[in-house]
Image (cartoon, rainbow over all chains, first blue to last red; front, side, top):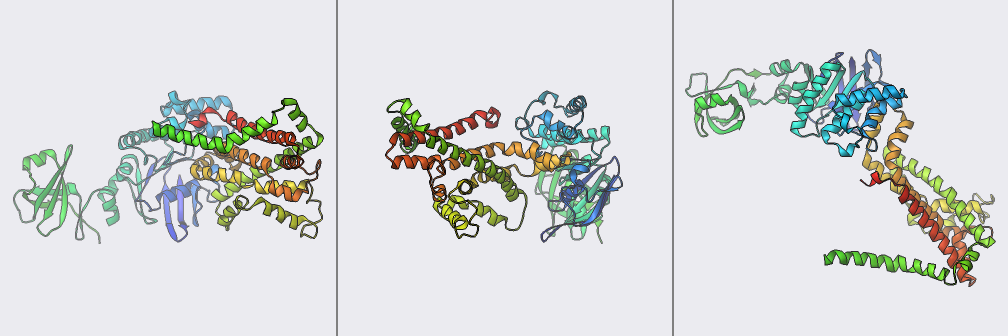
Length: 316
Length: 258
C-alpha cells in the first residue's frame, strides 16, 4: 500500500506537484494518467525516493519513508528509456539487485533463471542490452526490478519508447503478470487507452493537481470535470455541452429534437466509422458509427443528416 | 575512388611530414653508429638519474590527476554547485597558460621571499612535481566529462532503486562506463607529464644528476654537443610514450569497440 500525502514539489519557479494526495491499495494496479508536465512522473519519482518532496510525506506499507533513500525503500522502478546497464549482460542486469544484497550464488542463479523465463528472455541471457530490441530491453528492465521482490513496482511510461504493436503486447503481458504476482503497481502513462486497458484504478492528473481518481469505467461514464471528460476519450464540445462521438445518433429525417448537419468526411477505422459533420450554425462535431449503421444510412460526403445526442454532459 | 585515396594520401602525408619523418630521423641518428653507443649514452649515471626523476614526476602526477580528474568530472556533471561553471573553466587553465608562466608562478610563490617560500620546494623535486601536476591536470577531466554527460543519470538511479549505495553504484555502474575515457585521459596525462619541459625547466634549477628530468637532460646533452646522448635520451622518451599507447590499446577489450 502506498500513501502519498500533501506532496509539494517545485523545480525553480515551476510547481510540478501542488499538494497532491493519493492512496494506492495493496495489490492493485493503478495508472497515473495525464498530459506531459502534469506531474505524474514526478509523483512516481517522489514515491521511489528519486526526488525529494518540498512538503508532504510518503508511506509504504504504513511506514513513513519520506527521508529514506531509494536503495532502502524496496521499490522496483522501470524507466521509459530502460536504463539498462550497458556493460552487463541480460543475466547480470537481472541479477544486479541480488548480488548487491550478497545473496548466495545458488539462490541468485535460480531466481534469475525464473525471472528470465517469466519475461521470455532465457535464450538471450548472455546478450548485451545493445543487442536487444526495445521490447526485450523493457522486459529485462521489468525482470531486473522484480528480482528484489519489491514492495511496490513503479513504471515510468514503460512502453512510451516502443512502437504501437509492441506496446499493446507488453500491456496485455503486464496485466497478466500483475494478476499472477499481485505486486502493488503504479504505471505512469499519457495514453488514456493504455491506462484504461491495464489499470484497476486511474488517477487523472493535470497541472500538478489530481483531477479525479476512479476505476476506468466510472472515469469514462462519470468524469468529474471537463478536463477528465476530454482527456479520457474523444469528445465533441458544443457550447457548455459535451457529447461523446458514440452518443451521437444520425437520422435521415428531422424529428423535432434534431439539428441539421452536413457530412463532411467519412473515416473508416475497420469496424468503426468516424463521421465528421458540420452543423448549420457552423459547429463541427464527429459521430462514431458502426460500418453497418453507415451502410444502412447510405451516408455520403455532402449529404444532409439530422443529429440527435443520445447522451450529453454539462459541467456546472 | 580517386577522392577517397586522395584524402588518405593527404592525411598520411601530413602525418608523415610532421610526425613520422622527424621522429624517424631521431631514431636513425641515435642508432647511426650502432646500438651500443646509444645504450652507453642512456646508461650514464646522469641519464639514469634523469630517467628516474621523470618516472617519479609521472608516477606522482598521473595517479593524482587521475583521481582528481574522475572526482572533478563527477562534481562538474552530477552535482550542481555554486561556481561549477567557473570551476569547469579553471580546469582548462593549464591548457591555455604557457608552461613557462606556470613555472614562474611557482617560483614566485615558493621561491625565496615568496608567500610560501623556504620549504625546499623550488630547485628541488617537490617543485618539479607541482609543475608537472599543474600542466597535466585537465586531460582526465576533459575525457571523463563528456562521457558522464552522455550516459546520463538513469543507470545510476536504477542502481539505487535496486539497493546499491553510492559507493556500489560508482564501482558497478559509473566506473565501467567511464573507465576507457579515464584510460585515454591517463595516456594523455602520462604523455604530458613525460614531455613537460617549460614549467619544470623554470622551477628545477637544472642541476645535473639531481633535478634534471629526461627532457631537461636531452637539452643539456644537446647543448654540450653530445648528439648521441641527446638523441638516445629522446628515443627513450618516445619509447615510453609508445609503450603507454600500446598498453592501452592492448588492454582495451574488443567488445568496447562495438
